[in-house]
Length: 160
Image 1 (cartoon, one colour):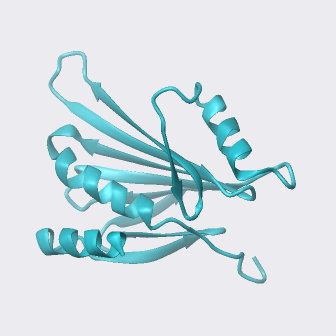
Image 2 (spheres, one colour):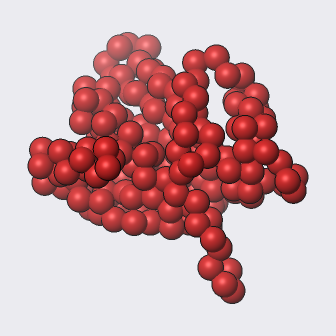
């Protein structure tokens, strides 16, 4: 309900904020319908038409059968330097985590904000990384939360 309300608020404020369902492997999410989609080496990339933001989506399979979702998430966070700086939450009814990082060029001419989400349901692992111009973070960080909040685990399609 809250996610639907947030989508409506964003859509009211941004004519280009209409979302469309996108599936990759066993994960589904809603992405802005006007963002350009491409793929390289298994990573899905969606880019805002303005060029001010893009998101990267990677989806994989857990290699150890029967792994508990929280154990899986802990392993992901461990591989990414530990849990410090991550806010744990639930997305798609499974454990996930969110972290925000900011980077500035040495001459301080440009600044980029990155919002990273990772999650695991014990079978599927995923990461969703939003890169945005820090000057536009108010618009794009809210959108990142909406997209991440739409994450859902789906059954693999037959024949795939």
